[in-house]
Length: 136
Image 1 (cartoon, one colour):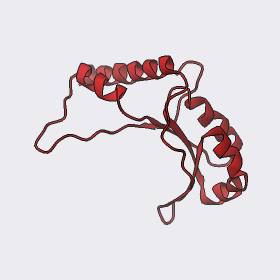
Image 2 (tube, rainbow, N blue to C red; image 1 turned 180 degrees about the horizontal axis):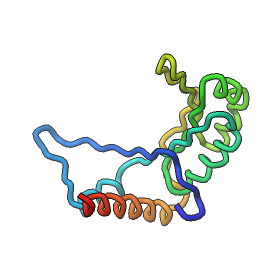
Image 3 (tube, rainbow, N blue to C red; image 1 turned 90 degrees about the horizontal axis):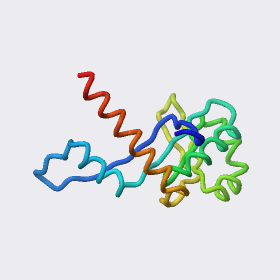
Image 4 (cartoon, rainbow, N blue to C red; image 1 turned 90 degrees about the vertical axis):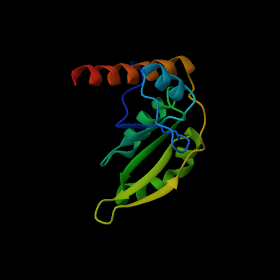
């Protein structure tokens, strides 16, 4: 997203009723995306401060944002948990040897700070999906 950065991962999900095939048209997908929560993840190996700054920027177009760090780095960053909470950015640690995620702080699902930027993010996602379909 121009001016807000590019997260390492954005998630969104929705459920369908039993025996119902998910709609795959771009317009149906657009409507679903507009009503779903977006979570951005920033993955860092060492510099949790840089990850925090980036994840904070993602809150302008995502409903929540989480920094994911290796367990040892996350443990050090958790000493500043009040900073993560004050910025409404989550902090998770990941131990690749055990595949364990430790959730030090997970923000409540909120609303993107800039709804226009959120709508642009949705359009960007839809454009990428459309491009992938065209390349098939």
